[in-house]
Structures are given as structure tokens and as C-alpha cells.
Amino acid sequence: MIQVRELGAHIGAEVSDIDVRSISDADFATLYRTWLDHNVLVVHGQDLQIDDFLRYSRRFGILAPHPSKSTRHPDYPEITMLGANKFDADGNLNMAIYRRGAEGWHTDGAYDAVPFKATQLYAVAIPSRGGDTLFASMYAAYDALPSSLKDRLDGKQGAFTYGGRQKRAALLNEEDRDWQPVFHPIVRTHPETGRKALYFDPGKILRIEGMDEAESDAVIDELTARMIQPDAQYRHKWTVGDIVIWDNRCSYHLAAGDYPPEEERIHWRVSIHEFN
Ligand SMILES: O=C(O)CCC(=O)C(=O)O
Ligand SMILES: [Fe+2]
Image 1 (cartoon, rainbow, N blue to C red):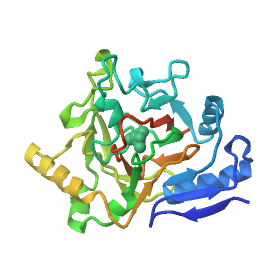
Image 2: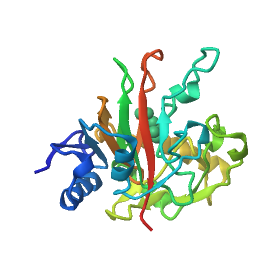
Image 3: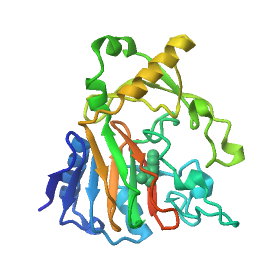
């Protein structure tokens, strides 16, 4: 019998007493429902090979290689290696690798025409301190907006690219840096729960369509200030063997990016798209 425990208020749940390598369809359905209800799902104590992790991840959807080719696993393109090769040949710390995901609250995949539904991480090596991942609810962000702002955003599309207004592209190969904008509604209805979320990413958005530049910039600043609701957060402290999956359609996340750089912090990571 799967045990479910809520973690943060409005976001985060953990399940115990399961081995993801041999979970039945009925138990997976419970797990999946728990994930949809809580946006972030934690499973502790798993002892996985890469094939096990891929097989389990494929139960959630279709895996896609990340656009950052240089950080893919050499033999498994669908696996991104977080934290690997963070020192160059001269011993310099590569900040784009060390601080990946730590530059600001974000959702993964807003740069894709169809943003991917989920990201899943498996903890392979964890430092002695620091290196947490923080999560916050997009539903709570939407619910807390003043109604005048909700009205202004109704029906508006955002234009997004990989590097956003800062043109951040350190992890992309040269040939992949010319990113064409894609468009998503800022108020996005979750396709499975039917709930409205503030679909927003300050690091990837270029502008809000249908607003002049000054208004768009002002609204982006306002949404940046409002997107994180303190009472709808969960902070994950990692242990080796943890699996955490988050729903990019209804949650933001942020890597703390603060662990001792000489220590290892390695995760296998997959991007998961909806089944067609
Ligand atoms: O390393 C982390 O804690 C999260 C990094 C991140 O933002 C991601 O994998 O999408
Ligand atoms: Fe991320």
C-alpha cells in the first residue's frame, strides 16, 4: 500500500514503500494522481541503473533530449547530467554548469512550441551541505493576482526563447543559439487538472504580445515580483537515491546553487513530454 505524505503547503508530496522498478499499473495510477494533485512528487531510497530510470520515466510520457548537447550523457542522449564536468582542464569552475537552474525561478521548456510537461531528477551524488531545489505553485501565483491584472492578462500570449531577454546561451552549442520565439498563453489552463496557472518565466520571456514595450516590461516586472507565493512552496533537501518529478505546467523551481563547489552534486535528469 503506497503511503502518501504532504510536504509543503499547496505543493509537494512524498510516497514511501515503493520500488519504482517494479511498480504495478494500479500503484502507478495512484502515484500519478498524487503528482497531479501536488505538482511535485518525491520518492526516496531508489537504487537505479540508467535503464531503470529511463523505463520508469517513460511511464509519465515521452522523453526528449535536452537542447544543451554538451551536457547530455554520451551514451544516453535523453539523460542530461547535472553537475558533471563542472571544472575545465585548467581547474576553473564552469558557472553555467555549477549554477544551472539557480539564476532565477523558472519553468523548464517554455522555449518549446509545446512546453514539456515534467522534469524528473535522480540523485546520484549529493554534497554535504547546500544544493537544495526549491519549488513554488503556479496555481497559487495565479489565484493571488489582483483581479484587474488577471483581466489584463486574459487571452494574452507571451513570446519565449531559450535565453530570453538576457540571451543566455552558455550551455548551448554555437549552432543552436539562434532560437525562434514560441508563444504560450500567460494564463494557462492545465490540460489534465483544468486549473488555471500563471505560466510565466522571467528568464525566458521576451515580451507579452499585444502590449507596447513599456507596458510589457512593466507587466513582466510585476509578474516577476508576484510569481512566488511564500505559502505555496516546498524546499527539497536531497539524499542519494531520491527521485523528484515536477510538473512544469503548474510549478516553478529554482536550484539553490550554493553547495561547496569542490564537492560532487550529480543528478540524472530527463525532460518528459505529453503522450501524443
Ligand atoms: O539542479 C537543480 O536543483 C535543478 C536544476 C534545474 O533547474 C533543472 O534541472 O531544470
Ligand atoms: Fe530547471
